[in-house]
Image 1 (cartoon, rainbow, N blue to C red):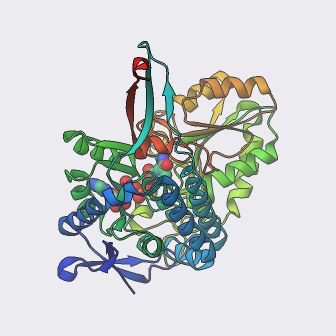
Image 2: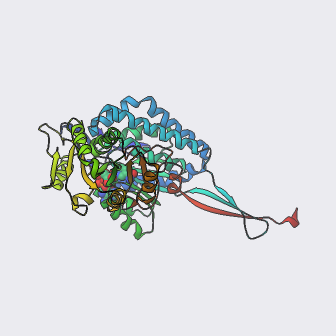
Image 3: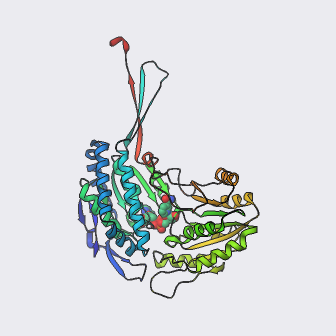
Amino acid sequence: MDVQNLIDGENVPATCGRSFDKLRPTDGGLLCRVSRSGADEADAAVAAARSAQAGWAARTPVERGELVREIALSLQARRKEAAEIVADETGKSMELALGETDAAVEMGFFVAGEGRRLYGRTTTSAMPNRTVLATRRPVGVAALIVSFNTPLPNYAWKAFPAVLCGNAAVLKPSEYTPASAAFFGRLANEVLPPGVLNLVHGLGAETGPPLVDSPYVDLVSFTGSAATGRWIQERAGQRLAKVCLELGGKNALVVCDDADLDRAVESSLASAFSNAGQRCAAASRLIAFDSVYEEFRDRLLEGARSYETGPVISEESLERILAALGDARVLTGGERLDRPGWWLAATVVEDVPADAELSCTELFGPVTILYRARDLDEAIAVVNDSPYGLTSAIHTASLHRAMRFADAVQAGVVVVNGGTHGSEPHMGFGGVKQSGTGWREAGVEALDVYTDWKYVNLIADPART
Ligand code: NAD
């Protein structure tokens, strides 16, 4: 199978027929050949978006919302097919892939409803007879650059609000998930006018920069690693483009001495290891109070030893994770499984200093580190001793502890007595510190990314009535 770009409503290969191989994580076999795009293809996609944007923005938000709903309905009708593609290209289970497909559909429904709201504001004025309307306007052309980990929700979180708000877009999916992106593009293309949503495939360092640098791209909305995000911010900053960055995490889950340990273990296992730990919201740090540390650790290890993680996305990813573990004290896992593909068993590590590189680096794999804390103060200090601040969780029976934690922790999301992941379409999501640059995606908060505010001043003259 060949995966091509989608530009101005047409499937087109990369110029000169350049392509790269996409391999299956479960066994390393060839899944498909993918157009390897560079500046020519990126420029063509941006030009298509540019010429489609004004006509698209002229339609009412209600109509745009109806078309977003149509795409979501079509994805819902083909959820099994979509999930099979995702499972195949990422190596995750059908159960996870189906759940993600449904999450992308729900995002479509949520965003579609905004077509009937897209509320602005009116405000009072110090001047008599002046009314001010704050209205949302499209930004223009948006480059949507996303990660591989939950591909369909990643496209849905950006493409749906982008087009609902009247932007035209160029989606640059991860080179590790071209097939799901092509499927999503196909469904969108059956509904949207040509050029409103374009798709360019390619390697990050070749396809991304021309999009980031294009003077015709008004907004770069990026989900991925802090390293790439930093580069994008610097580059797009040169031309003062609007940039939204949703980046990584080194998320912590705290287990207090009054926690329900069964629940804490269950939440920790799912947060650390589901999707092979390839979640921005994964719990890669587990902090247990001294008095329950051993019991929590033993139960966690028992669960980890039988946890089916699934493979990580690539050989490079697996090698990077194993290298990062170095000579850390591994309690379980830590080794490549003896089978084709990129499998790493659920891995638990302890005795890592809080300031060690392993404690501060996001591995994006099925690895979690155990820490001890004397009390809540020390636990909060460990949670906050991180360059990241995306999600966090605490397990406690005490409302007072939960509220103190929620207040003091440096994170964009706090969960009490649950996992570190599990966002929903109507909930704003994003982090502080190096987890992002202050934007929130999903929820109505996403509208702030994909619109600019315009203030319309109406000055009436009562003498002329
Ligand atoms: P990555 O940064 O390697 O790649 C992300 C995207 O950027 C890909 O499409 C890639 O091709 C592209 N890219 C790479 N180099 C580029 C460049 N120079 N210019 C433009 N684009 C470029 O990240 P990844 O490995 O795909 O994803 C994992 C990261 O994503 C983790 O850090 C994870 O925490 C983060 N993530 C964050 C969220 C969130 O909402 N905060 C959600 C999912 C994933």
